[in-house]
Length: 278
Ligand SMILES: O=C(O)CCC(=O)C(=O)O
Ligand SMILES: [Fe+2]
Image 1 (cartoon, rainbow, N blue to C red):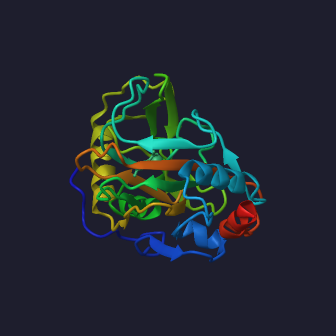
Image 2 (cartoon, rainbow, N blue to C red):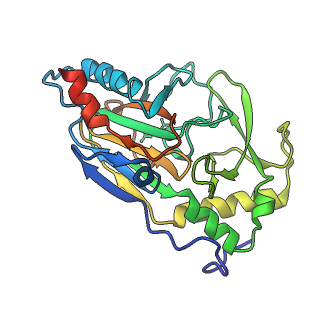
């Protein structure tokens, strides 16, 4: 099933590559957040240079944001992204981190994700984003029906070795357009929810086609530097850490956010940070 040319009769508009908004004190609306990746420079604005305090302040600020709840991952309110194998980690994780949606083991994955750079290490390992709507639009345009995609599932092994199964296509919980929630790693696709490998040629080819479109879709790369805080809509964007040689000094703090208020209210993190530093 070779990927074909430009989609015919696409039901979404052409989407530009993810827009990167770099700002230090801009207040972003939720609408902006669903169609852009927000990067806050030099966050938070604390006088202390102690990064553990900065993580604590950022966590407190995010916890008290009236628009978002901090979602606990299996590691708590904040988890630390380091490269290298953790002996306790039995998930299908490698030195690279293929394109994915975060929190696929939850019934409702987090609405937004945030990464805060504690140490960029060598500084040559970015995080890369693609718009899942573009990938989906191209898939549909190449002849795979949305109805078919809505029934396709994927399995995921969590850190305790447990399997979870989720649909790879769903509607965005707030904006209702269809999005791809997916893990480009090695997990096969299935049509049954008990996840026994179907060994289905059609699904193997579909996975190859999805991975082709993800790799072929315009991406946005974020290069890290200390204190950069990046927030994105976890449904709209798939993200990845590309393959380069491992850097044990690179450390990011990861936050998951759940929108509380369905109205387009501002994400006023810098203001919250100022309050936290007083
Ligand atoms: O290390 C990165 O750039 C991304 C890590 C990531 O996506 C994750 O921990 O979920
Ligand atoms: Fe991630």
